[in-house]
Image 1: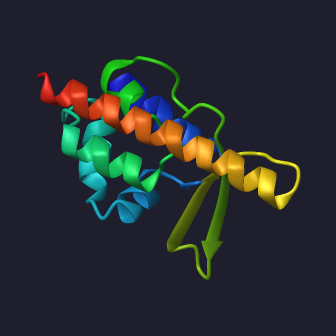
Image 2 (image 1 turned 180 degrees about the vertical axis):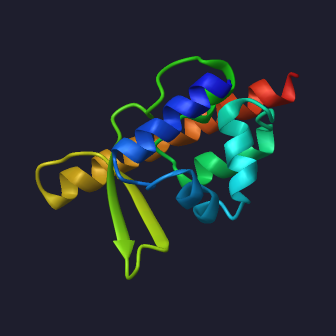
Length: 129
């Protein structure tokens, strides 16, 4: 699980959704040392943390982080990231490509349905532990 978390953080950094571990800690309202311990494997990832992480970065699959099942990125998603002002606010939107506005909205609905299905599968896995 730690390897997958590191891979997801590398993805966020590469795509400029976070600048570094300090920035990630700030976005998640965590201490930098907490994030550093997670990245180094000194601290185990909790299910609660994974939930918080995926709430902030919905393009990352919680199911994949927990179990390794599927892909890191939610199927069909790509990210539009907007940092406002000095970069302290991180407004991330997951959208699906589409031709015109109606098509794009339909695609966004499909994506949200897939996100919901994945969250439901994650809940089932957690409830069966």
